[in-house]
Image (tube, rainbow, N blue to C red):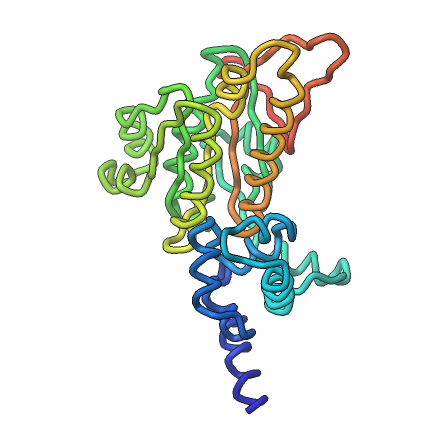
Length: 288
């Protein structure tokens, strides 16, 4: 019996590249009912459960403290939380990581080869400096084969300012020698009208990314909705908390799905002594 259980676990761990389907928790004794509750709450992979804080699992309706602890223990068995040697980490990075070309040799050189998976890259600059143009280019480049600087996958595009233009994508697709209609079909676009919608779209994104291969997540722009919804210095603390939670969720998704995340930001003046925080790799756009 134990041999059969071990074989099931091995089959789960050797499954397709990418996150482990949440149904794999059944091999660790978690019932289908509890798994369904997790899915309804936005957990669609074992990694998403493993990365979550216990209070987040406990907040799911119908899951008790005891069940939450059992679920976390099961997820940890499938996605071990442990130290590894630097050699093992290097091998894993070399095997799984990839970089998306920006379409510019000079920018690729600046980024060490392109926009890296497993991390967030932020570009910021004045209006009309080329940030959204870069986002459109990455939407196309991510669909190229890996050996051509692509990610062999689709793109998820969260648009907060209504700047996404399919006609621009068609022109860029022609430049890369790709069928523009196929390229557009492989881009999932969503318009966020406020910061709450922007955050909820990440839950939808998680569900989509467990069903198909996506090679990039783009948020253009990352902070505009938060600046609109939280105004004045009195709400600055609440804004930072909400924004940090959004960025942390993005960071977890980059690791969970092994994809690059590209966010844009506009230049803003420093408020008093509050320094501008940046989540990761940063590139300043200067009118490309």
